[in-house]
Amino acid sequence: MAATSPASDPTSAPPAPGPLFLRKFLRDPGGIASVWPSSRHLARAMLAGIRLQPGDAVVELGPGTGPFTERIRGLLDAVPGSAYLGVDLDEEFVALLRRRHPDIEFVVADAGNLDQLLADRPRLRPAAFVSGLPLVSMDREVVQRLLRTVHSALPPGGVFRTFSYAHTVLNPASWWLRNLLRARFTEFRVRGPIWRNVPPALVFDATK
Image 1 (tube, rainbow, N blue to C red):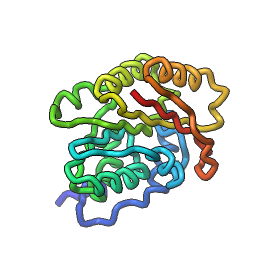
Image 2: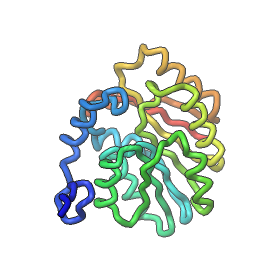
Image 3: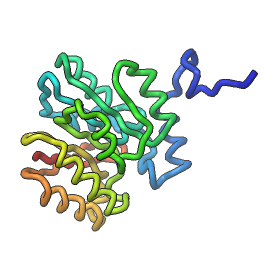
């Protein structure tokens, strides 16, 4: 009889998020970009001011082990008829999240294919996109295509939130991302630093 992996066994205890995240970072520092999951303080800042109406959806890009998902879940629970889609390329992260939140949708997919993911779900009405992806270090063409899709999918007043670590403030790629968001969205501001995060982070807040 073949052994069942922890990620696929619904009866086994889920791995602890912190050590799992650290292991992923050590395996792929460029793809994970941090040694530890985002803190509840950053999650609070990332979701501050987002208000949902019945029928609205939140799309989370790169939820990882789910620190933002927990906060989003509170928004969803307060608004009947709201919806959620979480997109992550890591199968182990998605397995963990599905076990924690079995009644909302997670997919193992590349966020670079967001346009197709949304086209496959025509009833999904995103009012907010929340990104944990390391956009500063990603291919610029992919980031531009992703943000075009996000902007097109949002209604007027819809929001896009992402973050960048404070130590990247002098990185030209960080300023490129800021300028791209500023040019594409009606309103853009940087909030933070959020010192009670490892590492400290800045929230990039864009409104269509």
